[in-house]
Image 1 (tube, protein in one colour):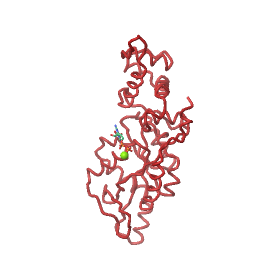
Image 2 (cartoon, helix red, strand yellow; image 1 turned 90 degrees about the horizontal axis):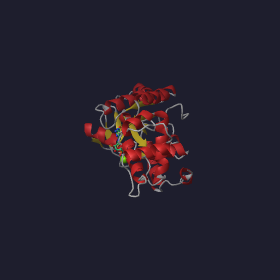
Image 3 (tube, helix red, strand yellow; image 1 turned 135 degrees about the horizontal axis):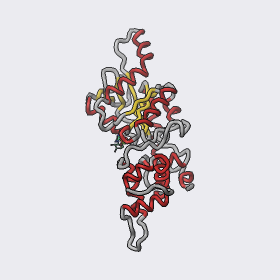
Length: 290
Ligand SMILES: Nc1nc2c(ncn2[C@@H]2O[C@H](COP(=O)(O)OP(=O)(O)O)[C@@H](O)[C@H]2O)c(=O)[nH]1
Ligand SMILES: [Mg+2]
């Protein structure tokens, strides 16, 4: 299973352009809103964000709360708070008070700076923030969702030549309508597998049998009951045998009587991604040493 390593430089060249754009745009914001996928909170981090964001304050939005395990998400929030990082968890698709939750969190983070400006006599301080994250974490969903609720796109500040569009999410906070796309990290195989399981990287990057074996192996350790419930199988077996049992249970058979692995791999991955086994958090704060 060395493919994750050999593919370490796989990430497409357009990321260099995205990075340049982001470094440019970041000058116009007061803070960044970093989205992490709630199912893979550590693996959806980009280690270079700090370098790109400089000293800008950061709010972590843990997305896909509905697809993760509540207790694990709570542990992540607690973890970030213990490290003095503001973090909130949201279902970006269904939450009806995203604007307020994000706006409140931004104001909390920027409170000191706002107080300073006000002390200097400024009547109203608008906080500008940029949404950033690796592919598939929910950047567009967040921006579209807040934009629908308050479609007040404001024009750019005078004197700034770049044609940036801002979306006001409250009296005091505006988001840049163009998110910053970061590339995922490939520090180790577990990270790569987590990214593949959740669809953050294309399916052709890692061998599907390795991804599914890893996923089923993790489920056997942490949630055998989810596999048993979904497929009606006994889980007293290793990952390879368990996949065979799922193939059998689901009738993934070839004409010659062998198992149709291609089909069963696709079926398992789809079930996981569609939350057919319930919410799954693939990483916990401590286990991953984050
Ligand atoms: N269930 C659920 N799906 C979400 C959430 N946020 C984003 N998605 C879905 O995740 C996928 C990727 O989201 P998108 O906004 O395109 O990600 P981007 O690549 O970061 O812009 C889409 O299918 C979204 O509907 C969430 O909080 N809950
Ligand atoms: Mg997008």
